[in-house]
Image 1 (tube, rainbow, N blue to C red):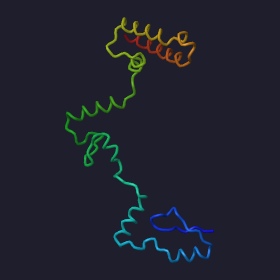
Image 2 (image 1 turned 45 degrees about the vertical axis):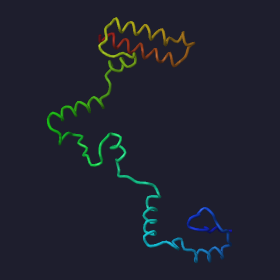
Image 3 (image 1 turned 90 degrees about the vertical axis):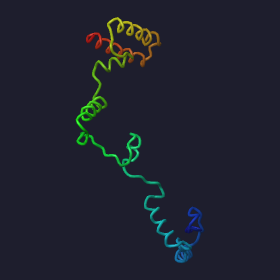
Image 4 (image 1 turned 180 degrees about the horizontal axis):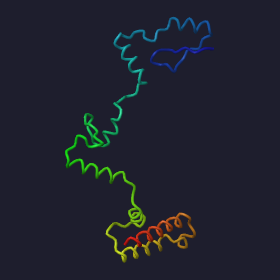
Length: 160
């Protein structure tokens, strides 16, 4: 048994024929029967993209960044005036530079600068009480968190 589509609108619904009859049916069947030339052209164009909407490359990224479609990306600051070049360079360095050891340590201890030695010690004692493995029944996650806190404390203690 061989299947043959019932109509253009219902391509997942089939007639079932033997080989000779399916060949005869397919010779007489015209997918575009009843369509105008403009409808056929529109159908072919829609088939090219698989009936999905399309947009220019990079459109979503520019939209998320708040840029309009016609704006020019100037990564090196060639088109910016002198005042903008320095600000743009500083913004890019702060956005893409890796965090320093002190910044990572401050983040691990949930502190923000400026930090005094007394403030650091108080925060360290608070975090040790909270994440000590004995208070969590030997939880490995708490133990790992305490290791990070100890490293952060030693880094900040040496820099303060």
